[in-house]
Length: 293
Image (cartoon, rainbow, N blue to C red):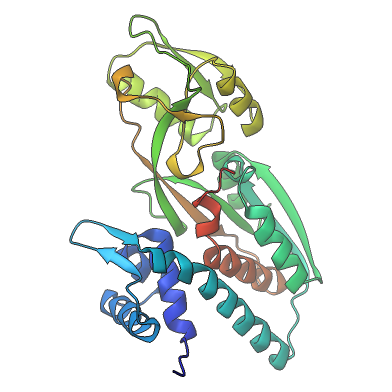
């Protein structure tokens, strides 16, 4: 059987796989939700397999859908490299990219390595900071592209994926309900810090700061040592840490969005930023599917 896969349908598939939402995928791609459904249906027909298990409340990848992720990324990358080669275009210039601390333990370096291999004449400058700090640097014109958190419900930025927040800590940690909750947090303006303090104060739970650092690695080390608990993205839980059991009585911290935000520079910087953004969106599932390894 001679089967071909349409790049437009593959891009739609990736958008749905990363957001687990037909509505969010349509918003990201700037197309109608009916078009998203049509692309997914036609791709499933071409593959002869169901790629998503879906009902009125939830969308999940099937086992075949998980397999399609790798193939889709490979096909789209080859398609884009061929298009660039025959168009005779090579990206150049300086690209100032900011990534939040959340990604230091993920596979983002693989995406950046692939981007540098495909675009060797782009001078990539990486800044790793807290999400709130990156937002401010972007607004000040010191960055061209940012990958960071935003609060669920905010609308700025291009959604990469949504995730729930969890309280996490060492497996042996026990929280005494009669004592202040020991917190491991980023300093202000950390988004997870703000969320942790908000929900504890809303529910009348006392708290104390057990550890603060701008380094995720330092916070993870403190949590592994049993110094306290931290609020963290469910899809990015580092090895050696686990969600705090519900019996601890900690209030639900809610959710968080991970987004791409573009700066105001034009010309070569914008073209390079667009190319890196496309690479991150194409490989975004790798950032949180087993990304804590």
